[in-house]
Amino acid sequence: MKLELKDNRVFFENQGSKKEIHPFWLRERVIGDTFVDKKTQQRLFDPTTLQNDIKIDNLSLSDDHLEITFNDGAHTKFTIQNILKEFSNTNEVKFIEKIKWDSSLKTLNYFEFKKNFFEEEDMYKALISFYKYGFVIFKKVPTDNNFIVNFANSIGSIRRTNFGEFFNVKSKPNPNDLAYTSLPLAPHTDNPYRKPVPCIQMLHCIENEVKGGLSTLVDGYTVTEKLKKDFPSYYDILSKTKVRFQFVDNSVILEDWAEMIQLDENNEFKQVRFSPRLDFVPLEDKEKLELYYSARKKISEFYNSDQYKIEFKLQPGDLLMMDNHRLLHGRTTYNANEGKRFLQGCYIDYDSTEGKLKHLKRKFNL
Ligand SMILES: [Fe+2]
Image 1 (cartoon, rainbow, N blue to C red):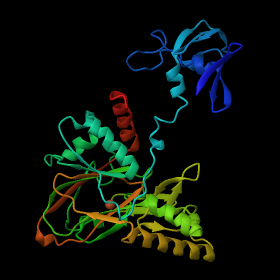
Image 2 (image 1 turned 180 degrees about the vertical axis):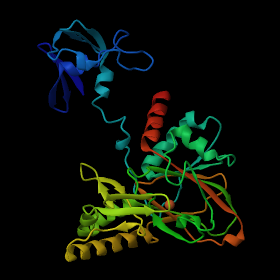
Image 3 (image 1 turned 90 degrees about the horizontal axis):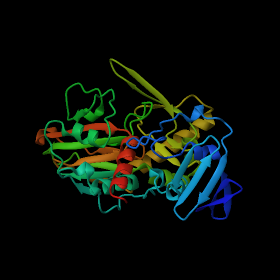
Image 4 (image 1 turned 90 degrees about the vertical axis):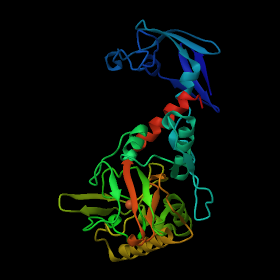
């Protein structure tokens, strides 16, 4: 990647392709104390009030800098590295490559909590691991005073849901969700009926005295890719049919329509939703529904199969952070008479983790 000049114009050259950079694009990026606030890096001018026909009057290029005088009198000295950064993908969280995993995954992603953890390089490593595998487990997280709220808010801010700012997971009488029983929970994603679906779930183990109640995780990305390869017609219908997910209790009815496998603008994996107690497919032609039901059965078999599932016991102080758009989670049954089992959970959004990751990357020059 490099910059070139010709006839008062600036070109960006990358792997044989050359593009002119619009003078306005450069003009609205001018730097210096008159144009940009040093501390916040916010503009001190409104580019929508600039004249439209911005042109370059004068320019010069050295090894490190590009100096320009524009026809409205503005003069600036860009660092070439900063301009090229705008064309590079390396800062983007979406370019962290996902690692597919199944039940053969040997090492769980453990990181030990310590003082000032959220400003440490280890936190950066933990977040990278989270984006690669869809989960990380923090050890030795203090279990007092709803610490999960502190923990979550130290990364971003909590996304409140109909279960509150945070929720307690232990068996309780008259539960409004199966999570609050000692029944086994098959792998599922949380809150598929929300717009938007909470991105990241945190589960903090406070007490765990029972033998069962193992936590289970399944990589929805691995399963989706498997379905795409071996059962393309199933993959197709599940990624094209919008179904209604709903949650009903005494005070609210929540609904959203979405595909079980959601793809992005490039037809790549974006999100899975799976909660077969809460999904309702619209009435379609019989043949289409026939295919849909077979596809749902197959993906359910994959999600529930021992081939894709990892199981582990959360110990007091463990905090599991998982991607609710990518992973499915569940737990095995337990006997509530054996002792206490108490977890606390909450949700945060992706921009929290992305913001933290970028901040730490900048801080440690990584
Ligand atoms: Fe859940």
